[in-house]
Length: 413
Image (cartoon, rainbow, N blue to C red; front, side):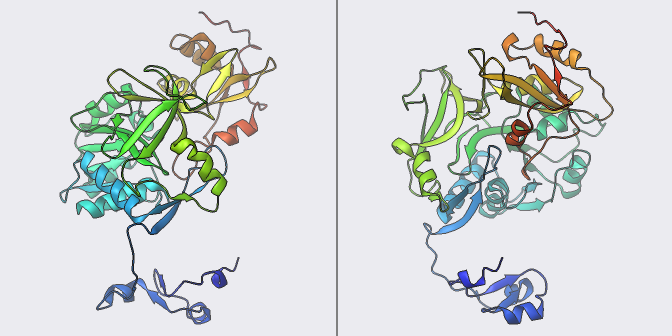
Protein backbone atom coordinates (compact mmCIF):
# COMPACT_ATOMS: atom_id res chain seq x y z
CA UNK A 1 0.00 0.00 0.00
CA UNK A 2 1.40 3.44 -1.00
CA UNK A 3 1.04 5.90 1.89
CA UNK A 4 3.51 8.67 1.05
CA UNK A 5 0.78 11.00 -0.29
CA UNK A 6 -1.00 10.77 3.07
CA UNK A 7 2.07 11.85 5.07
CA UNK A 8 1.56 15.56 4.62
CA UNK A 9 3.56 16.56 7.72
CA UNK A 10 6.58 14.36 7.01
CA UNK A 11 9.82 16.38 6.79
CA UNK A 12 12.63 13.84 7.02
CA UNK A 13 13.13 10.05 7.09
CA UNK A 14 15.83 8.52 9.31
CA UNK A 15 16.60 4.92 8.47
CA UNK A 16 18.69 2.17 9.97
CA UNK A 17 21.63 1.29 7.74
CA UNK A 18 22.19 2.77 4.30
CA UNK A 19 19.07 3.80 2.38
CA UNK A 20 18.47 2.37 -1.07
CA UNK A 21 19.47 5.23 -3.40
CA UNK A 22 16.71 4.65 -5.94
CA UNK A 23 14.05 4.57 -3.24
CA UNK A 24 15.52 7.60 -1.44
CA UNK A 25 15.49 9.63 -4.67
CA UNK A 26 11.84 8.78 -5.28
CA UNK A 27 10.68 10.06 -1.90
CA UNK A 28 9.37 13.61 -1.42
CA UNK A 29 11.54 14.32 1.67
CA UNK A 30 15.26 13.85 2.49
CA UNK A 31 16.47 10.48 3.77
CA UNK A 32 19.18 10.26 6.44
CA UNK A 33 20.93 7.24 7.93
CA UNK A 34 21.19 6.74 11.69
CA UNK A 35 24.95 7.30 11.47
CA UNK A 36 24.41 10.66 9.75
CA UNK A 37 21.78 11.59 12.31
CA UNK A 38 24.09 11.02 15.28
CA UNK A 39 27.00 12.87 13.60
CA UNK A 40 24.96 16.05 13.17
CA UNK A 41 26.47 18.94 15.19
CA UNK A 42 22.97 19.93 16.32
CA UNK A 43 19.55 18.34 16.38
CA UNK A 44 18.55 17.93 12.71
CA UNK A 45 14.90 17.55 13.68
CA UNK A 46 13.32 20.84 14.70
CA UNK A 47 10.01 20.50 16.48
CA UNK A 48 7.99 22.33 19.08
CA UNK A 49 6.90 19.37 21.22
CA UNK A 50 4.63 19.73 24.23
CA UNK A 51 4.08 17.07 26.86
CA UNK A 52 0.43 16.82 25.82
CA UNK A 53 1.26 16.04 22.17
CA UNK A 54 0.74 12.43 21.00
CA UNK A 55 3.92 10.40 21.19
CA UNK A 56 2.74 7.07 19.85
CA UNK A 57 -0.03 4.60 19.15
CA UNK A 58 0.27 1.32 21.03
CA UNK A 59 -2.05 -1.49 20.04
CA UNK A 60 -3.86 -3.65 22.56
CA UNK A 61 -2.88 -7.31 22.69
CA UNK A 62 -5.86 -8.52 20.66
CA UNK A 63 -6.44 -11.58 22.85
CA UNK A 64 -10.22 -11.09 22.70
CA UNK A 65 -10.52 -9.83 19.12
CA UNK A 66 -9.42 -6.92 16.94
CA UNK A 67 -6.63 -4.81 18.45
CA UNK A 68 -7.34 -1.14 19.18
CA UNK A 69 -4.84 1.69 18.71
CA UNK A 70 -4.22 3.48 22.02
CA UNK A 71 -3.08 7.09 21.52
CA UNK A 72 -0.71 8.19 24.29
CA UNK A 73 0.99 11.54 24.81
CA UNK A 74 4.56 12.29 25.93
CA UNK A 75 3.46 12.88 29.51
CA UNK A 76 1.78 9.46 29.76
CA UNK A 77 4.99 7.69 28.73
CA UNK A 78 7.21 9.67 31.07
CA UNK A 79 4.79 9.50 34.01
CA UNK A 80 4.54 5.71 33.89
CA UNK A 81 8.28 5.24 33.39
CA UNK A 82 9.11 7.39 36.43
CA UNK A 83 6.40 5.76 38.55
CA UNK A 84 7.61 2.21 37.89
CA UNK A 85 11.29 3.16 38.14
CA UNK A 86 10.51 4.29 41.69
CA UNK A 87 8.66 1.08 42.58
CA UNK A 88 11.50 -1.11 41.32
CA UNK A 89 14.24 1.10 42.84
CA UNK A 90 15.85 1.44 39.43
CA UNK A 91 19.09 3.41 39.14
CA UNK A 92 22.25 3.92 37.05
CA UNK A 93 23.72 0.76 38.56
CA UNK A 94 21.02 -1.41 36.96
CA UNK A 95 20.89 -3.32 33.69
CA UNK A 96 17.39 -4.14 32.46
CA UNK A 97 16.65 -7.18 30.29
CA UNK A 98 13.59 -7.61 28.09
CA UNK A 99 12.57 -10.11 25.43
CA UNK A 100 9.27 -8.35 24.64
CA UNK A 101 8.66 -6.62 21.29
CA UNK A 102 9.20 -2.87 21.07
CA UNK A 103 5.72 -2.22 19.67
CA UNK A 104 4.31 -3.23 23.08
CA UNK A 105 3.85 -0.89 26.05
CA UNK A 106 5.83 -3.11 28.41
CA UNK A 107 9.00 -2.93 26.33
CA UNK A 108 8.54 0.75 25.46
CA UNK A 109 7.49 2.20 28.82
CA UNK A 110 8.71 -0.32 31.39
CA UNK A 111 12.00 -1.11 29.68
CA UNK A 112 13.24 1.57 27.26
CA UNK A 113 11.69 4.58 29.03
CA UNK A 114 12.49 3.09 32.45
CA UNK A 115 16.15 2.92 31.45
CA UNK A 116 16.04 6.49 30.09
CA UNK A 117 14.51 8.12 33.18
CA UNK A 118 16.75 6.16 35.58
CA UNK A 119 19.95 6.44 33.50
CA UNK A 120 20.16 2.64 33.51
CA UNK A 121 21.31 0.26 30.78
CA UNK A 122 19.02 -1.99 28.72
CA UNK A 123 19.42 -5.32 26.96
CA UNK A 124 16.93 -5.95 24.13
CA UNK A 125 16.42 -9.52 23.00
CA UNK A 126 14.12 -10.57 20.17
CA UNK A 127 12.35 -13.51 21.83
CA UNK A 128 11.86 -15.50 25.04
CA UNK A 129 13.78 -18.74 25.39
CA UNK A 130 13.38 -20.64 28.65
CA UNK A 131 16.46 -22.77 27.99
CA UNK A 132 18.83 -19.82 27.44
CA UNK A 133 17.15 -17.19 29.65
CA UNK A 134 19.46 -17.41 32.67
CA UNK A 135 22.58 -17.82 30.54
CA UNK A 136 21.75 -14.52 28.84
CA UNK A 137 20.98 -12.85 32.17
CA UNK A 138 24.47 -13.79 33.38
CA UNK A 139 26.11 -12.91 30.04
CA UNK A 140 24.79 -9.35 30.16
CA UNK A 141 24.88 -8.90 33.93
CA UNK A 142 21.17 -8.04 34.01
CA UNK A 143 19.91 -6.96 37.43
CA UNK A 144 16.20 -6.65 36.58
CA UNK A 145 13.74 -8.11 34.07
CA UNK A 146 10.03 -7.88 33.22
CA UNK A 147 7.66 -10.79 32.69
CA UNK A 148 4.19 -11.41 31.27
CA UNK A 149 1.88 -14.35 30.73
CA UNK A 150 3.11 -17.79 31.74
CA UNK A 151 6.82 -16.83 31.64
CA UNK A 152 7.44 -17.34 35.37
CA UNK A 153 5.63 -20.68 35.43
CA UNK A 154 7.65 -21.88 32.44
CA UNK A 155 10.93 -20.73 34.00
CA UNK A 156 10.06 -22.43 37.29
CA UNK A 157 9.60 -25.75 35.48
CA UNK A 158 13.03 -25.76 33.85
CA UNK A 159 15.41 -28.47 35.14
CA UNK A 160 17.32 -27.31 38.25
CA UNK A 161 20.95 -26.24 37.88
CA UNK A 162 23.65 -25.95 40.51
CA UNK A 163 24.18 -22.28 39.62
CA UNK A 164 20.49 -21.24 39.72
CA UNK A 165 21.05 -18.79 42.56
CA UNK A 166 24.31 -17.52 41.05
CA UNK A 167 22.81 -14.74 38.94
CA UNK A 168 22.86 -10.91 39.10
CA UNK A 169 19.07 -10.36 39.19
CA UNK A 170 17.72 -8.63 42.28
CA UNK A 171 14.22 -7.60 41.11
CA UNK A 172 11.76 -8.78 38.47
CA UNK A 173 8.47 -7.09 37.75
CA UNK A 174 5.28 -8.33 36.11
CA UNK A 175 1.81 -9.71 36.69
CA UNK A 176 -0.21 -12.89 37.22
CA UNK A 177 2.54 -15.04 38.72
CA UNK A 178 0.87 -17.68 40.96
CA UNK A 179 1.95 -17.32 44.63
CA UNK A 180 3.49 -20.79 44.85
CA UNK A 181 5.47 -20.19 41.66
CA UNK A 182 6.64 -16.82 42.99
CA UNK A 183 7.86 -18.32 46.26
CA UNK A 184 9.69 -21.01 44.34
CA UNK A 185 11.31 -18.50 41.95
CA UNK A 186 12.43 -16.21 44.78
CA UNK A 187 13.96 -19.06 46.77
CA UNK A 188 15.53 -20.80 43.79
CA UNK A 189 16.98 -17.76 42.02
CA UNK A 190 17.47 -15.38 44.94
CA UNK A 191 15.39 -12.46 43.63
CA UNK A 192 12.41 -10.30 44.63
CA UNK A 193 9.21 -10.23 42.59
CA UNK A 194 7.03 -7.15 42.28
CA UNK A 195 3.53 -7.31 40.81
CA UNK A 196 0.91 -4.85 39.72
CA UNK A 197 -2.08 -4.35 37.50
CA UNK A 198 -2.48 -2.08 34.52
CA UNK A 199 -3.20 -1.90 30.84
CA UNK A 200 -2.07 0.06 27.81
CA UNK A 201 -4.91 2.57 28.06
CA UNK A 202 -4.48 3.50 31.74
CA UNK A 203 -0.92 2.69 32.70
CA UNK A 204 -0.23 0.80 35.94
CA UNK A 205 -2.43 2.02 38.77
CA UNK A 206 -2.16 -0.86 41.25
CA UNK A 207 1.23 -2.08 42.42
CA UNK A 208 3.43 -3.53 45.12
CA UNK A 209 6.53 -1.88 46.47
CA UNK A 210 9.61 -3.66 47.80
CA UNK A 211 8.36 -3.06 51.35
CA UNK A 212 4.65 -3.70 50.74
CA UNK A 213 3.88 -7.01 49.08
CA UNK A 214 0.94 -9.37 49.44
CA UNK A 215 1.26 -12.58 47.43
CA UNK A 216 -1.65 -13.31 45.13
CA UNK A 217 -2.72 -9.67 44.95
CA UNK A 218 -2.17 -6.93 42.37
CA UNK A 219 -1.29 -4.52 45.17
CA UNK A 220 -3.06 -1.33 46.21
CA UNK A 221 -4.21 1.65 44.19
CA UNK A 222 -1.52 4.24 43.48
CA UNK A 223 -3.68 6.87 45.19
CA UNK A 224 -1.41 9.81 44.44
CA UNK A 225 -2.34 9.61 40.78
CA UNK A 226 -5.43 7.42 40.36
CA UNK A 227 -8.91 6.59 41.61
CA UNK A 228 -10.13 3.03 41.05
CA UNK A 229 -12.99 0.86 42.25
CA UNK A 230 -14.94 -2.31 41.44
CA UNK A 231 -18.42 -2.00 39.96
CA UNK A 232 -21.35 -4.17 38.86
CA UNK A 233 -22.94 -4.09 35.40
CA UNK A 234 -24.79 -0.88 36.29
CA UNK A 235 -21.61 0.84 37.54
CA UNK A 236 -22.54 0.59 41.22
CA UNK A 237 -19.56 -0.02 43.52
CA UNK A 238 -19.58 -3.57 44.90
CA UNK A 239 -18.86 -4.43 48.56
CA UNK A 240 -15.46 -5.57 49.82
CA UNK A 241 -14.85 -9.21 48.92
CA UNK A 242 -17.30 -9.20 45.99
CA UNK A 243 -16.21 -9.49 42.36
CA UNK A 244 -16.66 -6.47 40.12
CA UNK A 245 -15.21 -4.82 37.04
CA UNK A 246 -12.16 -2.62 37.59
CA UNK A 247 -12.78 1.02 36.61
CA UNK A 248 -10.22 3.81 36.89
CA UNK A 249 -9.73 7.53 36.29
CA UNK A 250 -6.73 9.86 36.72
CA UNK A 251 -6.12 12.46 39.42
CA UNK A 252 -3.41 14.10 37.30
CA UNK A 253 -3.79 15.32 33.71
CA UNK A 254 -2.54 13.44 30.65
CA UNK A 255 -1.43 10.21 32.34
CA UNK A 256 -3.94 7.94 30.55
CA UNK A 257 -4.81 7.43 26.90
CA UNK A 258 -6.24 10.26 24.83
CA UNK A 259 -8.41 8.05 22.63
CA UNK A 260 -8.64 4.87 20.61
CA UNK A 261 -7.26 5.81 17.20
CA UNK A 262 -10.12 6.52 14.78
CA UNK A 263 -12.56 4.72 17.10
CA UNK A 264 -14.59 7.47 18.79
CA UNK A 265 -17.48 5.15 19.67
CA UNK A 266 -15.13 2.70 21.40
CA UNK A 267 -13.48 5.58 23.26
CA UNK A 268 -16.80 6.85 24.60
CA UNK A 269 -17.93 3.33 25.48
CA UNK A 270 -14.78 2.68 27.50
CA UNK A 271 -15.03 6.02 29.35
CA UNK A 272 -18.73 5.81 30.19
CA UNK A 273 -19.87 7.53 33.38
CA UNK A 274 -16.48 9.30 33.48
CA UNK A 275 -14.66 6.08 34.45
CA UNK A 276 -12.45 4.00 32.17
CA UNK A 277 -13.83 0.45 32.11
CA UNK A 278 -11.03 -2.13 31.92
CA UNK A 279 -13.09 -5.20 31.06
CA UNK A 280 -11.37 -7.08 33.91
CA UNK A 281 -12.90 -8.54 37.05
CA UNK A 282 -11.27 -8.35 40.47
CA UNK A 283 -12.09 -8.37 44.16
CA UNK A 284 -10.74 -6.28 47.04
CA UNK A 285 -9.95 -7.31 50.61
CA UNK A 286 -10.39 -5.37 53.85
CA UNK A 287 -6.82 -4.03 53.67
CA UNK A 288 -7.32 -2.49 50.22
CA UNK A 289 -5.41 -5.10 48.18
CA UNK A 290 -6.92 -6.05 44.82
CA UNK A 291 -7.02 -9.58 43.37
CA UNK A 292 -7.43 -10.23 39.65
CA UNK A 293 -10.23 -12.70 38.89
CA UNK A 294 -10.54 -12.88 35.09
CA UNK A 295 -11.15 -11.04 31.87
CA UNK A 296 -14.91 -10.49 31.59
CA UNK A 297 -14.82 -12.02 28.11
CA UNK A 298 -12.86 -15.04 29.35
CA UNK A 299 -15.03 -15.83 32.38
CA UNK A 300 -17.41 -18.77 32.12
CA UNK A 301 -20.84 -19.55 33.53
CA UNK A 302 -21.72 -23.21 33.88
CA UNK A 303 -25.08 -24.31 35.25
CA UNK A 304 -25.53 -21.18 37.29
CA UNK A 305 -21.95 -21.02 38.61
CA UNK A 306 -19.43 -18.32 37.64
CA UNK A 307 -16.01 -19.78 36.84
CA UNK A 308 -12.69 -17.93 36.51
CA UNK A 309 -10.60 -19.34 33.67
CA UNK A 310 -7.59 -17.73 35.40
CA UNK A 311 -8.15 -19.77 38.58
CA UNK A 312 -8.68 -23.05 36.69
CA UNK A 313 -5.48 -22.44 34.70
CA UNK A 314 -3.53 -21.87 37.91
CA UNK A 315 -4.54 -25.32 39.18
CA UNK A 316 -3.78 -27.09 35.89
CA UNK A 317 -0.45 -25.31 35.55
CA UNK A 318 0.53 -26.41 39.05
CA UNK A 319 0.68 -30.03 37.84
CA UNK A 320 4.41 -30.86 37.56
CA UNK A 321 3.90 -32.45 34.14
CA UNK A 322 2.12 -29.42 32.63
CA UNK A 323 4.01 -26.57 30.99
CA UNK A 324 1.03 -24.25 30.42
CA UNK A 325 -2.67 -24.28 29.65
CA UNK A 326 -5.58 -22.18 28.42
CA UNK A 327 -9.12 -22.54 29.75
CA UNK A 328 -12.08 -21.21 27.76
CA UNK A 329 -15.79 -21.61 27.19
CA UNK A 330 -17.43 -23.83 24.61
CA UNK A 331 -21.20 -24.07 24.07
CA UNK A 332 -23.18 -26.48 26.22
CA UNK A 333 -26.13 -28.47 24.95
CA UNK A 334 -27.88 -27.36 28.16
CA UNK A 335 -27.26 -23.66 27.58
CA UNK A 336 -24.56 -21.43 29.09
CA UNK A 337 -20.98 -22.81 28.91
CA UNK A 338 -18.91 -25.93 29.26
CA UNK A 339 -15.28 -25.73 30.37
CA UNK A 340 -12.53 -26.76 27.99
CA UNK A 341 -8.78 -26.74 28.63
CA UNK A 342 -6.06 -26.93 26.01
CA UNK A 343 -2.94 -28.24 27.73
CA UNK A 344 0.74 -28.20 26.77
CA UNK A 345 2.87 -30.79 28.56
CA UNK A 346 6.52 -30.40 29.48
CA UNK A 347 8.88 -31.99 26.93
CA UNK A 348 9.10 -35.74 27.40
CA UNK A 349 6.15 -35.94 29.83
CA UNK A 350 2.99 -38.00 29.42
CA UNK A 351 -0.27 -37.44 31.24
CA UNK A 352 -3.65 -39.07 30.65
CA UNK A 353 -6.87 -37.04 30.65
CA UNK A 354 -8.13 -39.14 33.57
CA UNK A 355 -5.05 -38.31 35.65
CA UNK A 356 -5.40 -34.59 34.99
CA UNK A 357 -9.13 -34.58 35.80
CA UNK A 358 -8.43 -36.37 39.09
CA UNK A 359 -5.75 -33.77 39.87
CA UNK A 360 -8.22 -30.95 39.19
CA UNK A 361 -11.03 -32.59 41.13
CA UNK A 362 -8.85 -32.68 44.25
CA UNK A 363 -7.93 -28.99 44.00
CA UNK A 364 -10.94 -27.01 42.72
CA UNK A 365 -14.70 -26.79 42.99
CA UNK A 366 -16.37 -29.66 41.17
CA UNK A 367 -18.33 -27.33 38.84
CA UNK A 368 -15.07 -25.74 37.59
CA UNK A 369 -13.39 -29.03 36.61
CA UNK A 370 -13.06 -29.05 32.80
CA UNK A 371 -15.41 -31.30 30.89
CA UNK A 372 -13.21 -31.16 27.78
CA UNK A 373 -9.44 -31.60 27.50
CA UNK A 374 -7.16 -31.35 24.51
CA UNK A 375 -3.40 -31.90 24.67
CA UNK A 376 -1.65 -29.62 22.17
CA UNK A 377 1.93 -28.90 21.15
CA UNK A 378 1.53 -25.15 21.69
CA UNK A 379 -1.01 -22.41 22.34
CA UNK A 380 -1.74 -19.61 19.85
CA UNK A 381 -0.17 -16.44 21.20
CA UNK A 382 0.38 -12.80 20.44
CA UNK A 383 3.99 -11.56 20.08
CA UNK A 384 3.77 -10.54 23.75
CA UNK A 385 3.12 -14.16 24.82
CA UNK A 386 -0.57 -13.67 25.62
CA UNK A 387 -2.86 -16.54 24.64
CA UNK A 388 -5.30 -15.72 21.83
CA UNK A 389 -8.35 -17.29 23.41
CA UNK A 390 -10.70 -16.07 20.71
CA UNK A 391 -8.93 -18.46 18.33
CA UNK A 392 -9.41 -21.33 20.77
CA UNK A 393 -13.10 -20.50 21.14
CA UNK A 394 -13.46 -20.39 17.36
CA UNK A 395 -11.91 -23.87 17.05
CA UNK A 396 -14.13 -25.19 19.88
CA UNK A 397 -14.52 -28.95 20.12
CA UNK A 398 -12.15 -30.68 17.69
CA UNK A 399 -11.62 -34.30 16.73
CA UNK A 400 -8.77 -34.44 19.27
CA UNK A 401 -10.90 -33.25 22.18
CA UNK A 402 -11.45 -35.64 25.09
CA UNK A 403 -14.88 -35.52 26.79
CA UNK A 404 -15.06 -36.31 30.50
CA UNK A 405 -18.76 -37.16 30.36
CA UNK A 406 -18.35 -39.56 27.40
CA UNK A 407 -15.53 -41.21 29.34
CA UNK A 408 -17.98 -41.67 32.27
CA UNK A 409 -15.66 -39.97 34.78
CA UNK A 410 -17.54 -39.08 37.96
CA UNK A 411 -16.48 -36.13 40.08
CA UNK A 412 -16.49 -36.04 43.87
CA UNK A 413 -18.15 -33.03 45.56
